[in-house]
Amino acid sequence: MNPGPTGEAVPLSVFEPNPGLDRETIYNYDIGVEYSVSKELTIKTDLYYSEIKNFIVVPFSSGTGPSTVSFENHPNTAQIYGGNLQFDVKINEYIKGFLNWSFKYFDQKGNRTDSSGEKINFLYAPNHQLSAGTYIGPFYGFSGALELTWQDEYKVPAFWRGIQDLPDKPLNDFTYLNFRLNYSPPFSVLGNNDPLRLSFFLKNILDERPQETLTGVNSRAPGREVFFSAELQFH
Image (tube, rainbow, N blue to C red; front, side):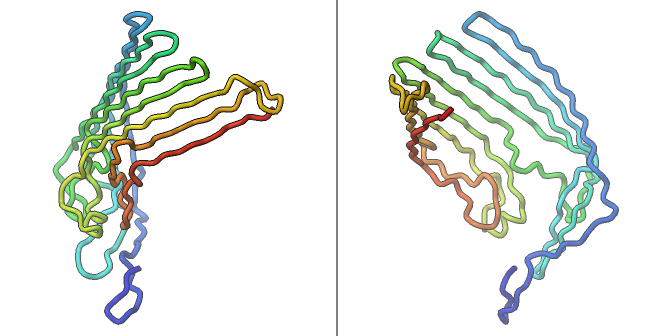
């Protein structure tokens, strides 16, 4: 709801049902290969293609008054091409890691638009993503992990972009870097064979503040966070 000029409640949008809505039809094709180069290195790769017919969209009309919101089928057919490549490395019994790169590209059959004049917009879908992780332990009760995730720039809905006064362009890429350290003391607690587990977690070390999903309010990530925990299992 939005306050009008005289204080009355004016809805941001009015929902209108669409009894003629057809269900989406999705065709997926994928192929994958996994190859062990050695005991220390494994390579995995996947390629896929998806085609979506009767793609369901929510067009928004422009104007100063409340817009009418309704689901409808887009006349174009959405196409998604993608794949990923992953390397799994095991240096020894205590050190291992991985590196993964995924990509996807978007296209559409047809040159028509929905009722608001838009072609199919592929939202919250970056073209490239990269993730990596290193895991150490356990030795002498210690184990740890360092994980990195990078996401390419991505498009957001024009409706929310207008409400939050954001520029008409994709949102910036961002990187999350997390670190975890665990310690299990070499003694039992309360006669339990499972030792106490202490954890330290440093999340979002780079203090990134992206808006991964727009909701009309400030939805930025909270930034750098630190957590401590103690865990004891009872049987």
